[in-house]
Length: 139
Image (cartoon, rainbow, N blue to C red; front, top):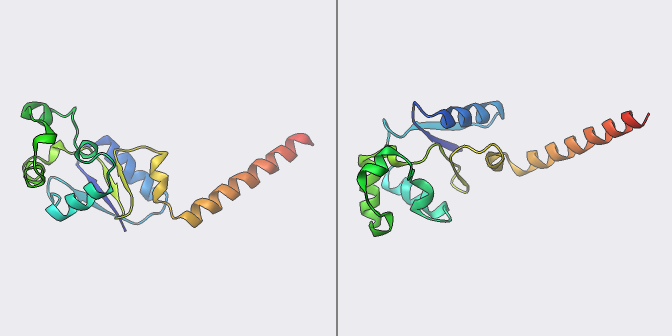
């Protein structure tokens, strides 16, 4: 199951939600302000990152700028406490299915959440359509 962590005013969150809905992928949406991430969820997300906290934190956010902290100086527990107290510090949306992670909305990257056999079928279908178009143009 895909989990979509969002905030109400986030345009990228609305785009991700619309894309998942249009793709017919079931997902659970969670507002990070009314239902903050737990310590276990943050740990699971961090395990899926390549760059640790850097991927999850919005360094351009007003919340982050006001804090004047270095993320590298925080222990894991301090990081969790920071996110619990100030969920607005997180980049959004956060999309995960416990194997994959996407932070922020990127239309090319979000395709990773479509099951592999459906992606293969779509690729074959597109190739067939292109062949048909080539044949029609040749005639």
